[in-house]
Length: 69
Image (cartoon, rainbow, N blue to C red):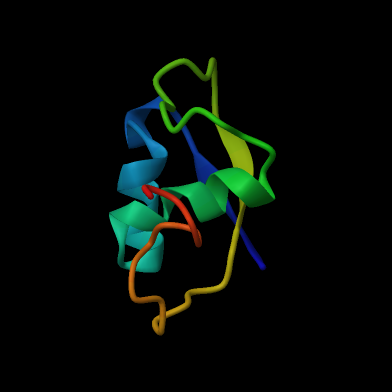
């Protein structure tokens, strides 16, 4: 896992996932490894360090198994 620094300027985990993982729908993976539930970064008061999961290019969808059903 890699660490990245984010701030409110990054807007949301959707944006971070698109930039770092190549798939905005994988935002939940970043949230999961960092104990987060809200993808909105606009509420964080300053910069924070987040762990970034490894890129998984073989995911058919960014959604976890069973999500959306």
